Length: 121
Length: 384
Image (tube, rainbow over all chains, first blue to last red; front, top):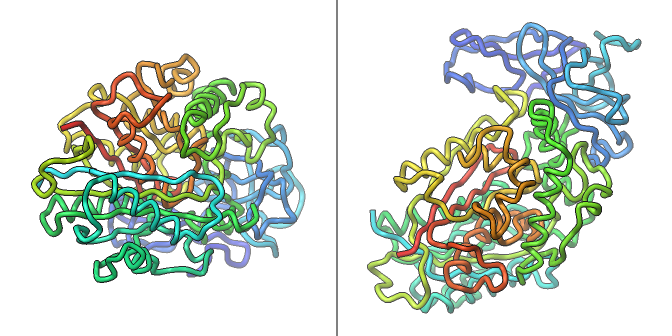
């Protein structure tokens, strides 16, 4: 399956029929069933709509815990899940926090706070 | 469609099994058949659930179970629907029997994970999430439900003690259930001082990894005629799917497949939530029990944790929920869970739930979710 991270960009799909923007792979729209999906470049910034601080990680993130797992509503539409390696405790994050995508050699879609310095965005 | 019954139901003690999944599954199946008064030879099909059998280097376990029951010629198939695997098997059994294809079906759910460490077990559980779009981005199973809990808290501002009340209540029920993994009560202090696993979920918000096996015997009324147990009459057997990924859900305040399956089930049964005396719901985490009660239509959005705190769902409350102790305290042997909910309803109907009887056991509902809601089953049973 083609990943949605590519050269510092996030690729998604847009439904020409109902307008749904999604980061999830598919051949038809998960909302209206239309087959008219087109490739769509997702925004790299957005805000956190839900999150957790994981103290017990999955096996591919063993050395990274604790970290935040986030659902981000992207500017311009679509939501995407990702993780924030620099967020270590509950009080470091709140719903509504502005974040930006940060391309990395590590697995998964990584976000940092919009105001944080560093690569990407 | 023919009137269809559950005429036998058995579970072993959940927790840590010494024997293999295949041995445990065969043993509970034989016990359920014995209880039904039927013979293994009556079985027309065995529907098995064993999602993580591969951890025991064993797939295709149905023929091994049938062989152990002395009926190697009976067809079998394994169904996988994550944590709702055995309620999916139950639905298939119902369809076969009610539709007249066979007279008697056996449903067996079994899981064994205790030979794995926590990391390996957590990773097995995560297999049911979307690997490419969730697990690879750092999600774990508790993490996904914690994400739902964070959205719920942001919207409704429940106190920690309200979720604590769900854990305390389910442990109190499990303490009276000989099948349960945790047969001990916990205090609110124990709950509140337990470590964070995936904020806001503490250790005592989470169900354990359990081994366990449950079996059900499903039969057409006209085949059984004079049952030796108080049968559960199927009033509804409904399943639904829904968008799996958190990132594609229109809101994070519920499980859409629960809403869809409940709607189908209540229409099939020609009932409303008011007709239900007690429920077994899918409480893999305390937040899941709250969401279930709201999505099934028993309580308005945002009120279930508060109502639980105020005692509505206690065993002697107006709406007893999870008298078995639920996944939270009875335990969650993934593929045995859905069938074990029906075992609890069977024991309540048959006066076998000693010390944990609900005030009224005439009509009951079982609700079983696959993963974070990619699939869901709702069954409704009544007395004859």
